[in-house]
Length: 106
Image (cartoon, rainbow, N blue to C red):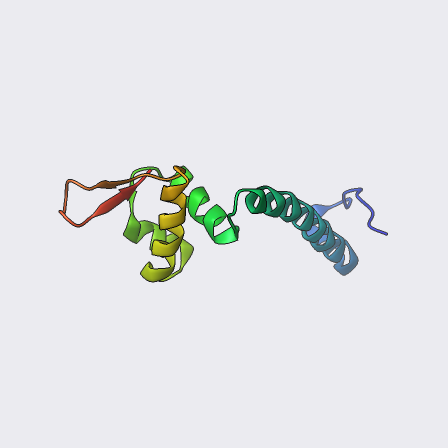
């Protein structure tokens, strides 16, 4: 059983206290993922779409190159995701002013 009480001194956590913290993070993330996955699935989307929307939402107007760098994926993979998100009207791509081929994501 996981004990949610904090350790007395967080600077000197026991190994067991560290493992309890890891367990709490694991189960919280698992439950969070489940709800997000269900919502995405109901709209025909997956985690790749969610990650892209997160990055674009945090950095609106950023170039595709920045999204590629943050997501650590290839241009082809992001292109497929952006096509779907654009079709669902969740993401908008605009031409950048700096370079004719640059695309900015909103």
